[in-house]
Image (cartoon, rainbow, N blue to C red; front, side, top):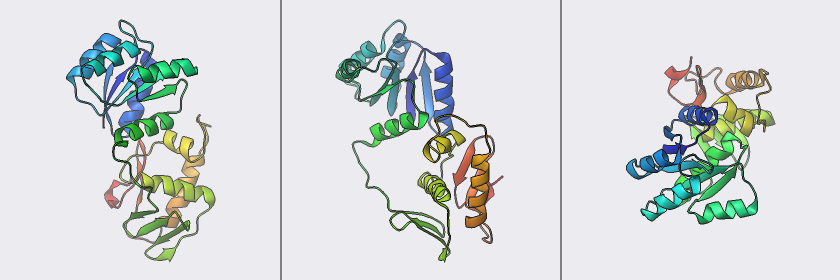
Length: 229
């Protein structure tokens, strides 16, 4: 996915750029509204993330200018202004969604993904399958090579999230927010412990490992055995 980020706060922008790239997305960043408008009109992207309070040209004026050029790229507005009137004004300016600061990255990512697929909604999957590993979301049953695998509730949630994002790097931040509901790093080895337990259950005694550690990035579910390090 190609993302245009228009954000004047360098620290906030750096965090978002890093997090989005960890998820495999290409990011174009501009630090003021005028440059953001130039890039929005010149560079095809899948979604725009635009801060409302920008120098030179504010975010709402930027969006209005983009829409006047018949550019219908989905736009997610970021703002510290969270009152109903503020959100309404943002959406009426041409924004498609509005996220109030501070926010959780996983919520931002989910909203961005929703914007890009909104025209073609997908049915919720009831089964995740990777090679001979099967997770049935209706029965909460997990099998590998037709053998039942018994998981604790947290291990099941961890595996479900990893399999949902099979083939993608899942970062520690994403796991903390989605599996543990932490919006901060508790500075513990809780993820490492659960990954180790899960790996011992789904990979031990099988020739091809499916749960891989991507050094310096996170984890990935894949049937390409050479990925693990």
